[in-house]
Image 1 (cartoon, rainbow, N blue to C red):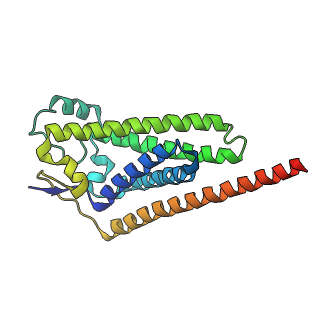
Image 2: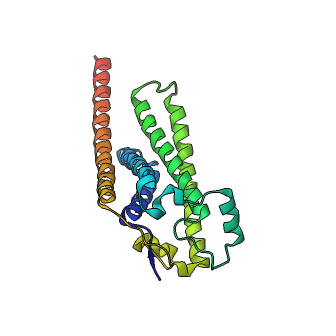
Image 3: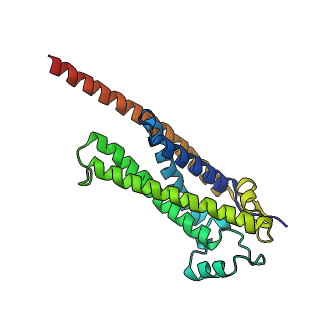
Length: 231
């Protein structure tokens, strides 16, 4: 028996978030690609904002009230981990907790990155200078990387010990080998999903162009200053 638990919006969000963060993290070490780093970072933030809304209005297993994050659930999960009769249709307790942290840290990382970029054009923002924003942004980026690694380890362990459930496959197909209620979507959620991913692509495009324009303006200002000094 298969149950449809992850709709296309949830799966698309998962892969776009993973791709956006990984690319942004890798490009953070390359000065020549900071425009792409900035664009992917903002896209990640927009994706998470919409996912937070989706967690309130979306289908059953994507809803936050379906996330068993409580302490009792965490303890029961540990006690029954090797009990194959205990199955979770949606996120299991540790995965639910890690996902919530990914959303919080991801938003914080994206926001701190935006403020870091803005600090390049202003001495102080919110009474903080560029060095402070740089340090904060790096902390959040590394925390997010750690959470992503935890998420991957969780998927690996679930695949090893509960392979028949098909958690890994569900990230691609949306189905788990479990008997439960299939998710249902409606026109409103479909429209919301279109707005969600259109907004993410739009922000990516705008952020990329904005950084290119800003870089050109800075280069022009530096050129003018150099000419003035030469005169």
